[in-house]
Image 1 (cartoon, rainbow, N blue to C red):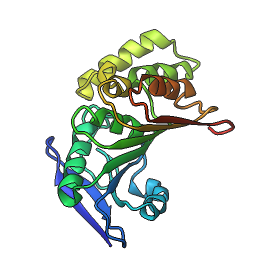
Image 2: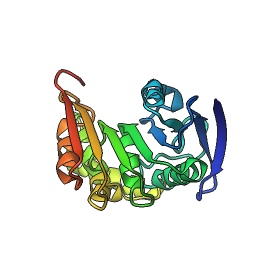
Image 3: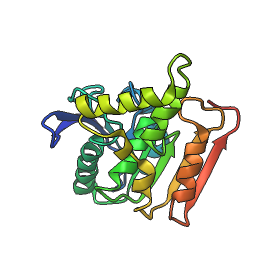
Image 4: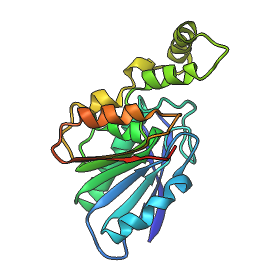
Length: 219
């Protein structure tokens, strides 16, 4: 059984969600978070794995993606509050264990959401440990632009037009305050979100129940 519905964001727009009820009755729910420029369709690949393992599935279109409103992406600064609403809905709907899985930006968002709502476990796939560091990494890839003057201009531009400070978008700082099981997945040859970021995330995670899978030849 599948249903699409909306929750109201505290920032005024509608958050689009898709709920897939497991054909075998279960009270457990996995929340699935897509990456930047993607939407629910982009992470449907995770559905069958969790249905087979006894979970209902809840997909969220993040701010300014898919059918969710909002004009500007903040890589978790604002999105974490939208995701917290999805967690609350899943808890009220089913009452069982709640886990989250996300890739890239979705992984960054779900870690930051731990500042707002608790869940039972997370799986982060190629997430950034710090958006500030990710911006610097991307600027280094632009050969014709010096990193630091461009970085300061970028940070000022985002503060003025995005309404947030990229230094405050820090999944790893959020994770320091959580003690839940975590699985970290990353391609060792990833040149968009560098592999060392997942190593940082893994090392910071407090839980004794943590696992890291490094895909050797994967980007």
